[in-house]
Length: 278
Image 1: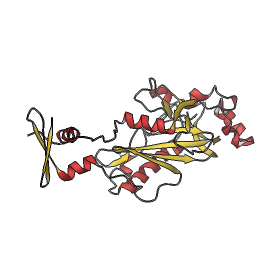
Image 2 (image 1 turned 120 degrees about the horizontal axis):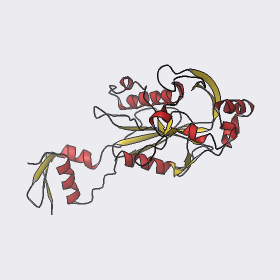
Image 3 (image 1 turned 180 degrees about the vertical axis):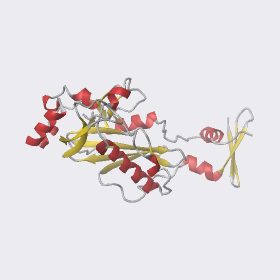
Image 4 (image 1 turned 90 degrees about the vertical axis):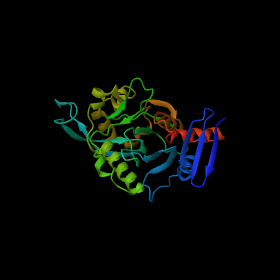
């Protein structure tokens, strides 16, 4: 059986084979009970839920149904994504837009916006973690095949300038800057066929057959002008998962596990995993 000894400011673990490892008591306590993340100040408008597991945190943001002006690739654009793509402005109604901003330790160990953020639709506001999510009929919201180990509806952040936030020392401000950049990437940088080229597809392409009113972006615009709330009646593709399940899936993909320390053996394993053996 492993034994753990604490003397002064040092905790030492000894394995049954006689191997030893040491860690400071301060580091041990931090590993056993990491500080709970608070909001770091005022949360961005629209953040409905904050979920954390281990070192990772998810901000769940909700935008109510509205008509948005979006940069959309033109039908005659010779280039389908990247530089040289031609865009036009379209005005289309969106249902409830749910964005999951995922934060995890970055290059310098600080908590910052990750590159595995996701978005979804809903036809009613979030009221519970058990509410189900729908796939977003948007270009640049990527579908992966197979889905295992990958985001379900990945937000492409290729052109997000991470230098705008990774060096910010204040955690709350760093997270807010990262989330602002994420929303900009999703809604303002231009919708094109990058997902069709780099991933399996986009959820817009996958959704065009669910309802004739969104079969094309032109038809979507046309119906929006007559009844912006029609998007609350569209049978958007179902994920079959609740918000809680999608969040758990993200945490699992990040290998963000809950601390489970119930015995001296668990404490000893923690010491061995976070210090050099002696």
